[in-house]
Length: 611
Image (cartoon, rainbow, N blue to C red; front, side, top):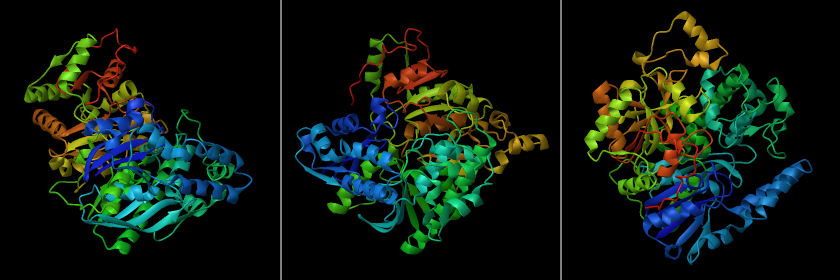
C-alpha cells in the first residue's frame, strides 16, 4: 500500500510517504520554497516524496489529509456565535480563507496530484498527532498525549496505543488550550506566535517564576487530571486578531513588548512563570494518563511536545519508564501521522517491532545529494573545493579544525524531518571555547544572543556529562550539566547571574567547561548520538573525543535567523558565503574559500535535481 500524508494551509505544510508500513520519505514545504513555516499546499514536498520512491501520483493508493476541514469550519462558526458581534472581523478573515483554498482541499489534492485515482481521506487533527507519536515509537503499548493550540475542536488528548491501533480516551476542547495559553505569552513577550515559542522557552531560565501564582489565580484553573479552564476575559484569540487584551496587559504591568525591542526583567520573569505553569500542567496530565491507561511508556506529539524543557522535567519524574517524542511534533508531523493512521488503523497492517530503536530512521527522511552531484555543481559554478574520499582522513581533518575553534557547516546524507538539525544539516563547533556561543549567535545565526546551543554527545558518554539516564536522539529533552563540569562561581558572578538586567553580561559569566552549550540555569538541550541512527555524526564525535577528550559538540541548525534550514547545496553555499562560517562540508567535499563573486549573489542558486 502506497499512502501519501499531507498537512497544509495553517503553518508548516509537509508531505510524508508510507509504503507497506515503512516510512519512505517526509519533508516540510518550507525547505524547498525557502519560506519559513510555509503554509501552502506542499507541492515540492510531495514531488520529493514521489521521486524518492520512484512513483507517480497514479501509483498512490491513498492520499490522506491531516485534519477535517468542515469540522474546523464548524468550530469557527460556533466560535463567532458565542462571541458575536465582537468577533466579526476575525470571522470575516477566517471564513474568507476557508471559503477559498481551505474548503476545497480535495480539489487542491486532485489539482496537484494529476493522475491520482485512489481514495482521498480526512482524519481528525489530534488523531494524526497521536498516530505520529505512537506508530513510529519503539513501544508495543503506550499512553499517548497530544497537546497543541487547536485542531478542529480538540486542543489536547489522552489516548492509548497498542499494537497497530490507537484509541483516544479523553479530549480537552477549544477554547481551553495549553498551546494557546503558551502562545498568548509568546505574543505578549514580543515573539511571533507559532514560531517564537521556543524563544520564550529559551528565555525562561533567565527569570524567576514570580508571576506563576498570578497566572494560576487569574488566567487558568488547573485540575488534577491536567485539564485546564482559561478565564477568557483576559484573552483575545476567540474574537480578535491578537492573543491578549488590555485586561491581560494590566495584569502584567503594561502593554506587550514590541518585537525587537530590548528584553527586560519583566519578560524574563513572565517567561519563567508560564514555563513553570506549563510544566505543572504537563506533569498532571501525564500522571492522569498513567492512571487511566496503566501503561509504562508515554508517547508525545503536538506543538507543545516541542517544549524540551518540560519534556526533560517530565522524564525526570519517572511517572513513565520512558518517553518517546515525535521529532516533527508540530503540524508538519501531522502528515506522517495521517499516513501511518491509514496504514495501521484503517488498513489493519501488522505493526512488527523490529530490533531497532524506533521506526523514525533518525528522522533522516528528507532529500540528499551524492558527492558526484555536488562536485559537478561546484565545478559548473567555478567554486574551489577539496575532496576527502577517505572517511577516516576526513574525520581527522574536521576534528582538528573543530579543536582549533573553526565553525563548520555540515551537509550530510538525508535532510532531517522536523525543526531540529541532527547532524544532517547542522552548524557545529567546539563547546569548550568560551566565545563560541556568542560568535555563532551574532556572526553566523544572526539571532538573539540569549539563546543557548544544543550539545550533541556520544550516547554512551551522555550520563558522564549530563544528569540524564535515557536517550534524546531528537534533541527533545533538557537535562542538567553534571556538577563536576560546572565552575565554582564567585559571589560577584553569582550576583550578576541572578540579578543583572543585561542579558549579555549574564551570558558572559563562564559557568562550565562546556560554556557554549550550558544555559544560565546549567541545563542543556541535548542530542544523544548513536551509530545506528547517525553513523557519520557518531564517527565525527568519536574522532573529536580522541583528539580532545571531549565527546560533545555544539550543534545548531544550518540556517540564519528567519530562514528555514538549508535544503540544497545551493542553500548551504548561500549561508556559508554570507556568514562567518569557516568551513563547509558537503558529503566528502570541503569548501573553505569565500568566493567574493558569489557573496550576496543569486547566481549560484540553480535548481538541483532531487535524487
